[in-house]
Length: 166
Image (cartoon, rainbow, N blue to C red; front, side):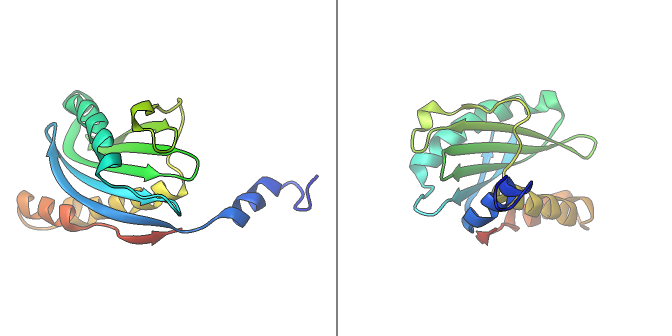
């Protein structure tokens, strides 16, 4: 057993845990969706157009079938330049208070090699922080908001997360 006993794996994660930078990269109309785009950057990595472009192409193809999955036309794209590779997550709100999530993974800095993530793969702690913000924004502005739908959607689109997440 390690010095941390049965919790050695958790303690090893804790020792290497650090903040990552989240940047809002704008809102776009794509494949029948209003899409909020975020970059998540591990130390020493950045998300620019070279990284966002291929991720947007993946999202466009995925979102094009969104109406068949009950999509409400509102989505979030996370482009994560991680320490161990690159990750792209397309999250959209669908009927029945549910959401749809697609994940792609690939080697760092090689966007042409992004492939669908394995079955069961879920957001990491940094991605989950952005999605938690987005859940709150969806509820606050759209479900619990007041006023006409266009004003609610505009408020949701303007509500973004920026800075460091842990």
